[in-house]
Amino acid sequence: MVHVTAQPGLVFDRVPTPVLRVRAGRPVRLVLENRDNVQHDLWVVRPDDRAPYLEPAFPNAKTRLVEPGGREEVRFTPTRPGRYRYVCTVPGHETAMRGEFIVE
Image (cartoon, rainbow, N blue to C red):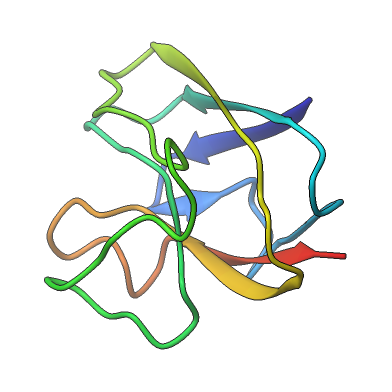
């Protein structure tokens, strides 16, 4: 399981640009917990994609908007090794709420 927490101050896990590592071809269970007082989501996207033109890098590699105090779990299988990004797609959040998603 991969667990990411949206923290107050528009950050994931209180770490600048956190890194998540998974294996290609293996199912991923991704949990987003929202401890902030505004909505957040989390999408795994290609490294060069920028808002507002984001698409998930893999089918189902995105959560819905998670309300404050809520959590959401998604399952997907990353099929291509490489370096990807994960971001919050709420307008204005992407520049601060991002991390690296490495598929080995």
